[in-house]
Length: 295
Image (cartoon, rainbow, N blue to C red; front, side, top):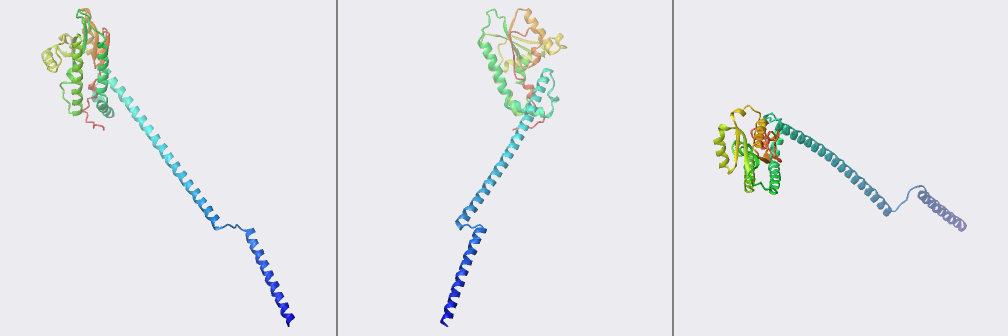
């Protein structure tokens, strides 16, 4: 009996040992055939995946923003080119209109808007620049004592800034400021000893009214006011002005400077030593064109 119990105990012991070995073999199999990691390693792995995902998302957002920026820039360049083309077209149209003495009513609407925008931002700037050239030139010269050195000044420019009131307050303000600038120039030329010959395209029958308007507006002490005779009424403006310069030349006058905003004044011979083209507000006075003022 004792022997049998010992034998049984020995069998149980052997069986337990065998089971333990089989269990150890089974655990080893799981380790060798699967992927084993600790909880700390798993956390690091998941964190790496999340970080990689965030980086990819950030990169995608950055690429999207860059694409939108490029599209906006391209759109801006196209818009700038469009405005630049319109600016060039309208500038040339105004120049040719001035050259051929066309009416502003023949302008397309987009160029009327351009003209109004120009008058708002650039007219006085261009006028003051032209005046600076004139002041600089005559500031370095002195007329001869014989009184034959003269300056021809377009009186129609002076008169256009005085009467003919526009319904556009902005244009009226520009004309007032331009009038102040030209009166200042006129007085400087007189103070320099120059003989001022004012010329207008008006017929001589309006002499009294024209003389009164000029003197009451600050243009005093001129040497001569040149106006059309009855025989010159049928002449083109440029032909009439050229003919009068020829007459002055034959009388021995020396034209030191010719100042006007209109291109017809610069056609023909005997223009003098120096010509000065002023900005012409006529082609930017679009207050009656029913065009809205751009901001």
